[in-house]
Amino acid sequence: MTQTLLAPSRPGIYARGSETVDAILKAALDVLIDEGAECFTIRRIAARCGMKVGNVSYHFPRKEMLIQVLLDDLVDSYGAQLEDVVRKPGLTAEERLKLVIILCLDDIGSKRTTHLFIELWALANHNAFVADRVRAFYERVHGVIGDYVAAINPGLSADDVHTVALFISASMEGATPFLGHGKPWAHKMPAFTALAVQSLVALARTATSRDIAALAPGKVPEPA
Image (cartoon, rainbow, N blue to C red):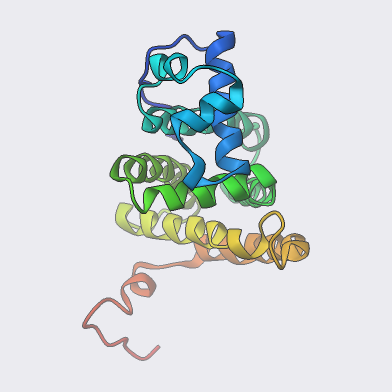
């Protein structure tokens, strides 16, 4: 069964859709994207949205709560895009995986995603809660990719499917500091995307457990 990007229950004392909470969340996202992880504090977020610190902390007592909600919102957004673009009827698993790769790399090329995830990774280096939230986000991404890998290559074990899905995800995310918004080779993103679609879908189709285990620690690969 195809997995969906479902968000977990959310923390904080707030009602989504309220003007105050929406303003706080927008300010939090803007601070992270425009000013960076070092500026991501309740005080700075309050200043950004023109509120008192106490008003922000009433709804989100810790900045980590804001991180979780921002990631949950991203999950909802990507889930909607999957429904609109990838899960249309009549497509093969390979066609769906191609669309996922294109969607992800197009998104990586945007300012929001380039800056947001670089700053989230920076926060995760020093905050165990943020690291866990980022890990959970990517686990859901890997699950979606893995569903298509398993459909394309049913001979793989569940663990091998996850390894291939992880490789596909890491290959795309690794492009961020090189081809993301404003990065040195951003102009090459269309060519990179074309190569990624060709190579990563082929990998999903042809990878075998033998390939994956060939360079396992302590194991010398056998001649072909």
